[in-house]
Length: 213
Image (cartoon, rainbow, N blue to C red; front, top):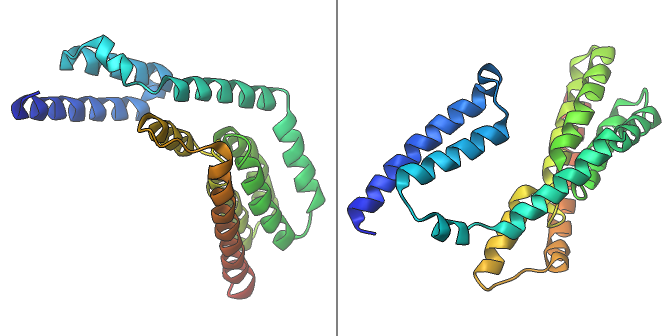
């Protein structure tokens, strides 16, 4: 491609990106699922760019997409059968009445589960439970539970290759570049990073909400 053609493609891509982002934000108004918005955006970009569809398809990370499809099916089954909710409620009952224990339990429990399953459905399942606990407590200190949930679900995903979407994408790109990273190689380093970051978060939450507050 010539430099001019590359600039034109860049402009087209940015315009489509803005349109798709706006459609994501307004998908409830447009009555379109985010997945439909993403597919329409991809097709629109393909048409406007006039690139060869077969050549574009060769660059798609198909193994990564298939992995995500299987992952969401598995997580959806866990959510719909009530397994994640059952675990969440059991953890909540175990720490009832002890805010410090609840916050630490949510932090490390979220980190552990997010290393195994996708954190999006987990957080969606836990959010109503945390909201009820915060409302029942009625004090500003109980906001620590939201931070425990957010930090644990986010940082725990670094532990394994399947803990976060970005991990899977990076592994796919590394394999395509001829530098494959095995699941256990990633986990060997990821577990250390996750454990250290969650431990630092534990210290922060304890100091911020139970010592300084």
